[in-house]
Amino acid sequence: MSIEFKYISPEETKPLRQLVLRQGKSIDSCIWNGDHLESTKHIGAFLSSRCIGILSLFNNKTEKIENKSQYQLRGMAVHPEHQGKGIGKALVAFSEAELKKSGITSLWCNARTSAVSFYKNLDFTVSSEEFLIKDVGPHVVMSKTLT
Image 1 (cartoon, rainbow, N blue to C red):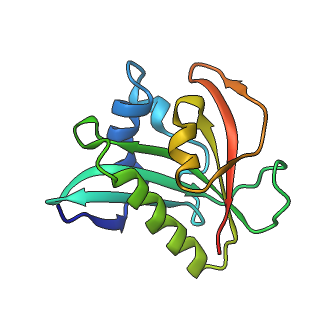
Image 2 (image 1 turned 90 degrees about the horizontal axis):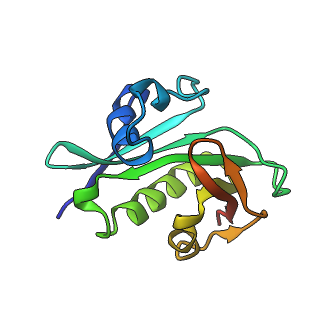
């Protein structure tokens, strides 16, 4: 299985965002503030020209970590038919390498509590108490230093 990673448009993220992250909600719920900023990066994982995984990187800071050079990982989703095959891990690794090229030294996310072990396996650490995102569920801030 040969996966290709490439930058995509915000519009290309919406089908997987809806399928995996916003099930039962309108496609409009998959449009986020900052999606169209020049600093925002959307990355897709493609298998045979089909987008099977996505994530977005926002130039955004959290007070939960002190590093000044931060990006936020949001909207990571892998098509249900392809989950558990290392695609999410590879998407994050590709994204980290891209951020390092730009001199970014920290990556963080609001991780669903159900995804904490996934991020811990990628060397993220929990940086906050649990909190609730309305209509989405319980989350924690997780972060990682990019070296």
